[in-house]
Image (cartoon, rainbow, N blue to C red; front, side, top):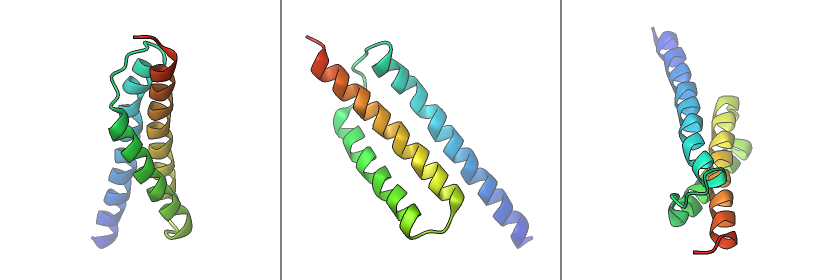
Length: 94
């Protein structure tokens, strides 16, 4: 029973990672293609820093490949939103 619950938890965590990746797509499209300034830069700075720390933790502390993959995609998603938002902010006139 314990092994089954652990396998369900592993599957659920992988699903959370996929959902998080999918969740970044609309904002990435908005700031990169549609040129909407709808991302809060302060929030994405904080989220990018914290996801970067989580990714480094996964690389150097936890020997868990799934956590490494999920944290890497989270860092990439946050970083892309932040990068495109900064480019949009400093290259467009308002």
